[in-house]
Amino acid sequence: MAEAVTMEKAVGALQKHGYRITPQRTMILESLLGASDHVTAEGLYEDVRKSYPHISFSTVYRTLELLRDSGLITQTDLGGGRWQYHPADKADHHHLICQRCGAVSTVPQEIFHDVHTHLQKKYGFDALMTHYAVYGRCAKCRGDGDDSGTGESE
Amino acid sequence: MAEAVTMEKAVGALQKHGYRITPQRTMILESLLGASDHVTAEGLYEDVRKSYPHISFSTVYRTLELLRDSGLITQTDLGGGRWQYHPADKADHHHLICQRCGAVSTVPQEIFHDVHTHLQKKYGFDALMTHYAVYGRCAKCRGDGDDSGTGESE
DNA sequence: TTCATTGCAAATAATTTGCAATCGG
DNA sequence: CCGATTGCAAATTATTTGCAATGAA
Image 1 (cartoon, protein in one colour):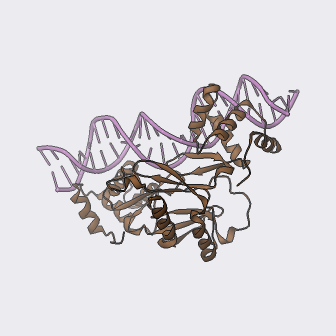
Image 2: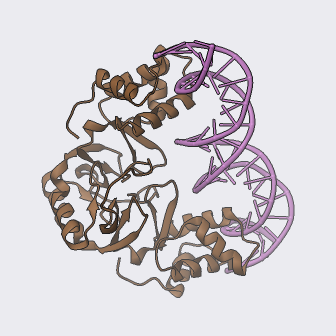
Image 3: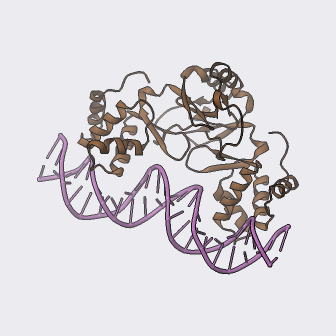
């Protein structure tokens, strides 16, 4: 959770697992490593499609599965019914998501440090507090009003 | 978040909103109020079906939507691709979910109290910390080994 | 060459929606 | 009686899978 994932390392890791290096995989990896934050399968698909229109959705999904199993990327379910992916080394932060305006901001890892310690001591539970999504209301949207319905998530 | 939701109150709330009281809605409400914890649409469907086999899935979904909009139940996305429902007054706790064995335990509200305060002070963010799911490893499963793949969620 | 990998189309799974028939108030 | 509600079937959305063709090593 600190080593930067580079193209070379990624390729090496894949070959070590016996996987082949195909142009599709290369492009997906490049797109992933270049992404600033979370990406969805669809986002990747669209991105790769720009330079390689022939790519198929199943290839994207299968590649993501394989990268995840190789430990190169993290697959996160932040609710909302779609997987979120990003390089494993960039998972040391959390997100504040405003249910009103949808704004997403990033907060550092240590926010949950005390909670983690507490759960560990009191319940023997080792919480995987990497990469959380915290829903609520951002500073701007503190007025109130309805949430357009859908629940809180997480 | 403290007033117990009873059948009478629920019915009153619905009528106040102008909704009709149908046998289907009554049965779904009863099932929900009787449930010890989270329920999924499918769980409810199966439960109601025991006494009323004619019930349809869309009615269940539509009723849940309506109960949610009336503030009687909470609709939560705990990841896993299905909504979780339960009476709004029972949402004052969190869950520890073991990614290894699937065990679910309950922890009190105040676990996240400090985090909430911190987010509020430092980021002006009013986190909706009602009813979280915390993934990780329970005391029993601390060995290690793979997670059967799927991500961490939340 | 040979088996891993791809693309396409079809299959899932959970939820949503259109619509005519029906029932609550 | 009349519009809200139901059930059914079909549509959606995100993801997965079967299978024959293809390409990396």
